[in-house]
Image (cartoon, rainbow, N blue to C red; front, side, top):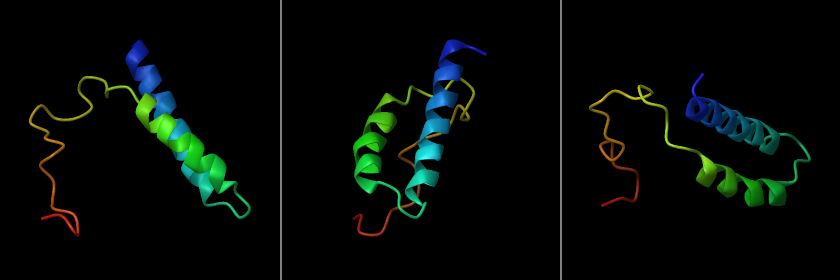
Length: 67
């Protein structure tokens, strides 16, 4: 596995585990709020081939409240 692929997979796994922890009864939500932005920012660019060549992250549907 390429180094970027490994970093990407590890960070996605940690974000998933943090989301599961946040849903547990008695979870420390202050911890979740402190750690989740740091993990999200540290997420490297996805490995080549993860998305199709014509993928546009801005091309999705409008979200409620968007004009």
